[in-house]
Image 1 (cartoon, protein in one colour):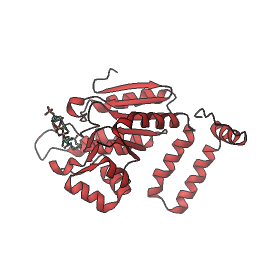
Image 2 (image 1 turned 45 degrees about the horizontal axis):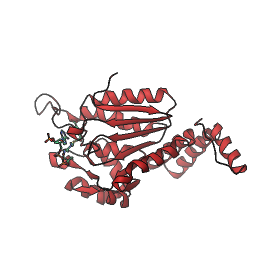
Image 3 (image 1 turned 120 degrees about the vertical axis):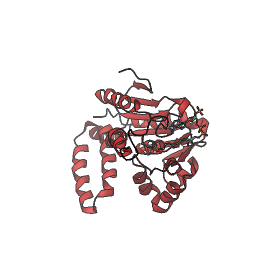
Image 4 (image 1 turned 90 degrees about the vertical axis):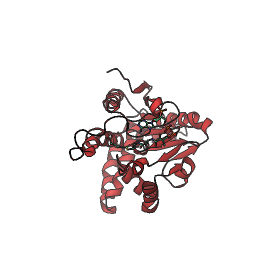
Length: 262
Ligand code: T3D
């Protein structure tokens, strides 16, 4: 598949998907979804160890492309929920369940479902000048593509409601101090920070990292007893990897581990 709305590169286990509609602040048009899935298929067909999602130009992603018809037919027939079901929800679920770390790089504004996309990553790093805008209320919609879930989970009901009902911009530094994102860094340090993060994840124990995110995400829906059982199950898997043997051997030999991801 040739890509018209994204850029894709893959090198040494790191796949990078860049939303590439800078003139529309990388608004999500319908063509983007199959392209992102195709890129993910390609990345997963190789030995993927980290996925990076970024935006081209001055923004990360302005959410749904409002220039596209938002559903067809009469007002009664219009079903934006069906668009979510077809395009957004499968993508968000796929990113969350990808068995490798996913990093989103928020270089500028993230709005609407662009916020959801940024937060669907495991680690979100934002430039100081970036911002997060739950623009949904401005157009009479509700936060979607996981936004209500990610927000309530990370910053609590009061702040989630404030952002969602008022639609005001949240600065990247507040997003960090509120616990919405992993890190906010100076604009001119964004690329280097992300490179260092990705380099570290790329040479990490990939299977163990994938199981770790699975356990942490599962914890929200489970009792302590269920979570202990899940940890027991996933730890058994982690303990059967070569990377576990390498990690222990490296510790005992007082050297750095050379994880292969398996
Ligand atoms: O049907 C479905 O898909 C359902 C799913 C819905 C999920 C959603 O995401 S709903 C929310 C949709 N997003 C928005 O409502 C955000 C709209 N954009 C804005 O509010 C502002 O653009 C921003 C706050 C993001 C940034 O403001 P600013 O001043 O930095 O930039 P700008 O001048 O508004 O935008 C620059 C250009 O991008 C501009 O085009 P122009 O005038 O230079 O030709 C603007 O029209 C375009 N643009 C920005 N956002 C979108 C967009 N074009 C299409 N769709 C957009 N969402």
